[in-house]
Amino acid sequence: MSISAGPTAPPTVLFVVGNGLRALDVIHPVQMRGYLTLEISTSMTAFSVLENYEIDLAIVDLDTCDGLDGPRMATEIAANWPDVPMIVCAGSARTMQKCPIHCDA
Picture 1 (tube, rainbow, N blue to C red):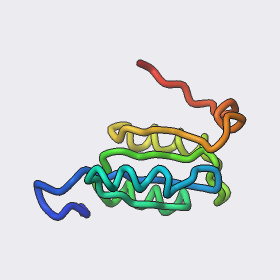
Picture 2 (tube, rainbow, N blue to C red):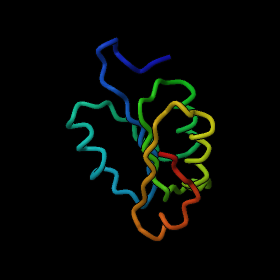
Picture 3 (cartoon, one colour):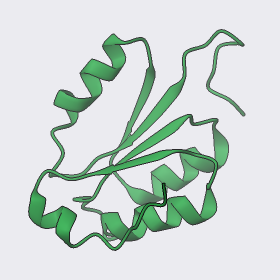
């Protein structure tokens, strides 16, 4: 199943946001550039969306607040959907320092 309206539909960006990321500050500029955006606030919903829809990019806030912390959620996404590019961000430097995810160039 795809949420795309057709072959000319814009790329879809999945935002998994918690308390730290100021969602509107990040999502609005992406929308203004023509991307379709989905804002999700729980890890289970994010996993369901990734399983059922074509996602072109996932942006994950490390400050998620639904029981599965952001680093673990980002690790799960990378393991289960390796073809989905991911940006991991946080609302604070302290959160980023705790992140166990390492990127290969």
